[in-house]
Length: 198
Image 1 (spheres, rainbow, N blue to C red):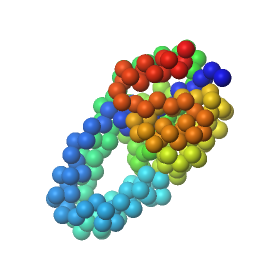
Image 2: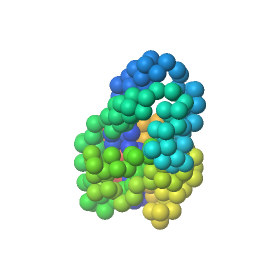
Image 3: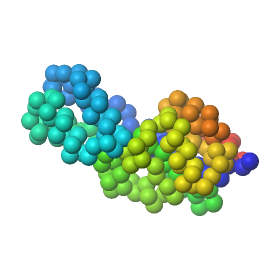
C-alpha cells in the first residue's frame, strides 16, 4: 500500500534542539535535583493536566525560590525548547504536501508550546494536523497517540510514515504498522523518506 501521509515529530526534527545546558545551569542555582517533585509537575505539563500558570506556581512552591527566578529559568528553557527551525526538512515536507501527500505532526509537547511554536515557525501553515501531547493527554510512545493521529487523518497505518529522533517512538509506530524513519540528520532522513515514497 503506497504511503499517503508524512508525520513528523517537532523537537529534534522540525526544530533542531541541542542541549544548551539550561537544566544543569539552573539546577546548580536552585540547589536541588529535578527529581524533587518537579518531574511530576513537568510531566503534568506534558500531558496538559495543569496550566502553564500552575506549573509556575507549583514549581516555585517546591523550589522555594522567587517567582522571578523561576520565570528566568522558563524563559531560557523556551529558547532551548524551540531550538532552530529545520528549514531544509520543512521545505522538503512542504513540497511533498504540494504534491498531494497529507502532512501531520505528533509531538510530546508542553503547555504553552503551540502558541510559541506558531509564533516562531507557523507550523499550522505547513501541516494538515498537529497532535500535541499536552492537548490530547497522551505521550509517545503510547500507541494511543499514533492511533488518534491516524483516526483524525482517516489513514491506515500502512499509508503513513513517521519521523522521530527517538528510536523507541519509531519502534512504537512500526509496531502499529506504520513505516518509520529514525531521524539522525536531515540528509539521512530525506534519503530514507525518498526511498519510502518512491
